[in-house]
Length: 276
Length: 321
Image (cartoon, rainbow over all chains, first blue to last red; front, side, top):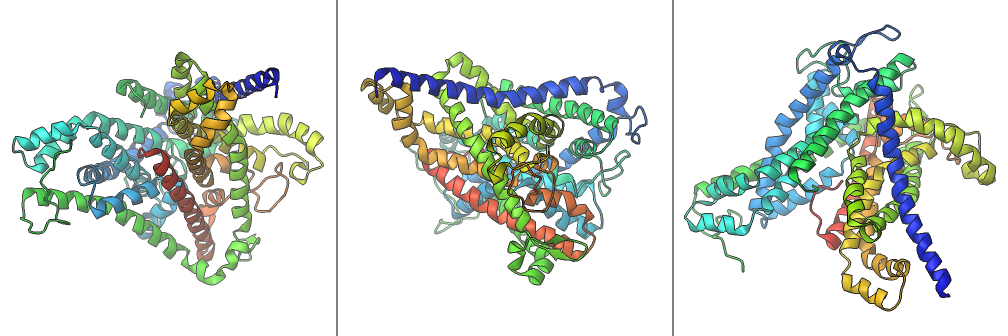
């Protein structure tokens, strides 16, 4: 090949790389633009605080879905955060035990479980046993997704703590459990909190695990053993409905959900000052 | 230098004393058993138990039958397995070259300032919930496919059975596009790590011999990174197979096998999402759960392969999927 065509090939390749990057960013831009344009006009105080109305009836809002999302994610956090952090601490503190290797591998495998499967799991475990869709079942489904991620980020954050700190503490005669809690865990707390918040941002938008666990509800939250509305499920229901005004409301709540998730995401990343 | 920390481990300690440390280890050990191992075992047990009525009624035939008629009680998973495979492959076909282009651009071509802006932007795509991508898919992408993408495909490639009309907006093609968008962040970010792990001496060697940037990347960088890139592709595939909402919203949900990508289809995850709450009798429900079991098994195999490969090449331990 002569120099000219080699140069041309090189140009073409550079162009391909730039074009790929542009092609990946265009859908993102289109999504954010459409959500903002179509969603912004829908949002009002009523929209954020009122109950939904039947189709073709003006007014009404997504207040119950916003409330429900907080409740279901809250239940998931209550179950998932302590269990995930505990297991992550075990992996970081006792990395060479056989149990550690098994737990580590299983946690990795669990991160790959499709979200819809966690929904089936919570359905079989909670909904069938307790006789109905419930906020609790939704929380369990989300907690199942949450745990492996928290295990991983906790382990990573604790492993970032310099060994010298741990050794200094042990050299001063502190027992291992005290070193783990007072030195390693407390040094790693920022990383752990970052990981937990990112995991919450990730599961807050999950729909599939909630479809047949938390289900849906057109009224306010009414106890953990009853079905509850959530933003993602509400967006899905409204998006696939045949009604124009419901579509508009779906965009409005999409804006609310995306804004919450992006603010959480970008905020954490800026605060952490590095990519996680 | 590594300091030997006195070990109180109950697993390898020969003469152990019952100390607070032992208690601490037992406590954390029990938590990790409950939160990870019991959870995984329970998940598997419930799925098998839940699908048992279907497993015992249909046996292996379930996987190869194309009949899906809840009214007459006929259940076969083939249309869904087919739809999952075709849409995921389509996603890889579109997503992998783009992801590699992005990875190369962000590691080898872009200036550090451009990189600092664009890499978080590409990763932002991973933070958008699947239902939002589905919403965009319904109202923006599906009409675009129907009006602007499918007609030229039919005109120029219509002789292929893959692009036979008529074109629907809700189609396997649209699902493939949505999935491609969703797997680009993971494949491109792991591929970037892979490319960054190539020793710069290797690259400089090629450049010093007079190779252009393109030749360096094709003949040195990509061969060196190909193992880890394969792992990245498997991670993307695992994600595409299990993706539910966005696909359910754009694939058209038709339990028939069409060769044409412009026709509606169905995936395993989508049929579960759509029909689970409608499943009135036990066999119907069990059949859906069995589809879940098959989906679980496939995505576990893909994910384990992906983990083993990326671990081997990159020692990546962060939660990546």
